Image (cartoon, rainbow, N blue to C red; front, side, top):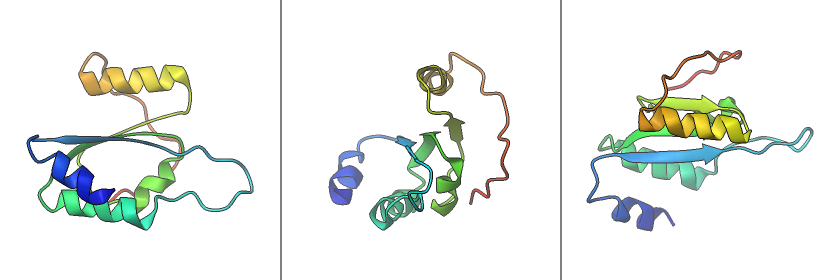
Length: 104
């Protein structure tokens, strides 16, 4: 639950969220739940979330508060491995989205 997540990260300087959306055509909206969005907002009051590593539909990120570092990848094993390598500093983050995503 949200309280456990926020209290368990107190000893750390940064929090990295790994998120994904696994969408199917004609199945409705793809959004984070209000509880997840509230948790992000609570952590960002103290600027705790350093990075979001997101795979899948990038439009779901539009509802989150501002996070200074967002790494977005596709839903494949190669994309996941590459995203983790970028996060670890083993690979340069390059590329651009083909969509106009309005991040906060």
